[in-house]
Length: 98
Length: 462
Image (cartoon, rainbow over all chains, first blue to last red):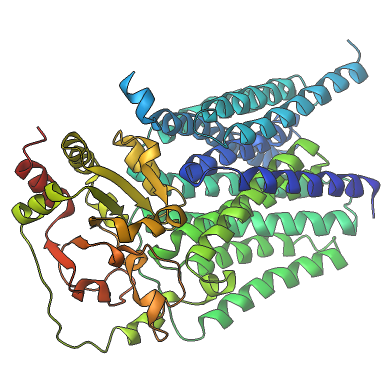
């Protein structure tokens, strides 16, 4: 097994546990914004897409990469935007009066 | 700057992004800090994207910048959709995310001018299979939520065998590729078979199961990104994918518990079939109904009111009328709270977002476990567009298909009022004994109009 795989596996397992503990603490009130936020974070695959498209190796890989750049960046922009819109709406009684 | 130093700066940018992503989720633990979470996530993402543009491998900027502009052009309107459309937007973004992960995996395979090892082949094949099936599965889910496709489960005999054979076929092709990576003709076939499996996976699942399915697809989309991180040896993808994947997984577990069902039951259970037979036995029972005027009188006399919203409220777009009802009753000194079942609506937390949008303070939105003990002291439980989550048969009737599912104990309130279009059984087709109880009053009509009529009787509204 390649050494890279092992180190990635360590990172994956640790990040998985961190995610598990963090998500458990998120109030059920915010489960919809949670999903749109993690979606926006997941759109970080855009960095891989940028490299594939920007390397410009073959026509096929460049086109596939470019489509992936557009699709994942739309998730990133849209995901953060809608999460913030949702969270702005959550007001407590105190803040509503002020 | 030499290339090695530059590479180190890029790595630091990615590490900073990872830290900010973790903080982002941490800030989400409370509504008071949640918006900081978005900011942290945005800074992290921006850092990573800008750093990547400086990567020396990136030379063809035209192929990067134009897609980025197109992506922003698509993403901004998708970020501005109406709150009732959030479930389908979420499903669509799962599709986009999974598609990106699959396309990058496919590109990586074809870019492999250097012959790939068997191990790498296995990683790529698995990543592309999960990405592809999540892509089509999420598209079907989005189509169902947008009601382009029928929301009822589409089932036929031997469905599970067909679906599982297709998945088996995709995996067999992957194994064949691992055995001999030179058989490149098998790769596109494998992708197509995985795409077909995604369609087969979600078509039999009904609308009421969408909260679980959308969470599962969320999880798959995350894990496909993490696997892509393995393929490309990119730790930032591994971490972001693991966070997203575990988030979807935790939500799926919560949704399944809230329906007292297992994953396999949701994926292969074909919910609709069970109910078709259960709905068959029905005797004539007495139902008492009331007018808006009578309902208004009962609400005015109450001290404590609990409103139970469901998907029907969202369909009728009644949330703003419900807010007016909340305002006018609060002004009269009635304590109004909202009981939120975890699977009310079409995705986790759906009801909270709709009610928050209607300006109802979030501290009035109470989770099921917290409010259930209060129903015996509640004067009026007002059910608006919720059905199965209030069905007392889940507690008492062992033969009921939803027996054992945690419900909101509205039947224990002194008076139950249910706004409903007609006596037709609900979405899942299960009869609800709640409607025949002595303390239940049925308010027949459209949720938005009926709540509006009550508000007028109470002298509020516009």
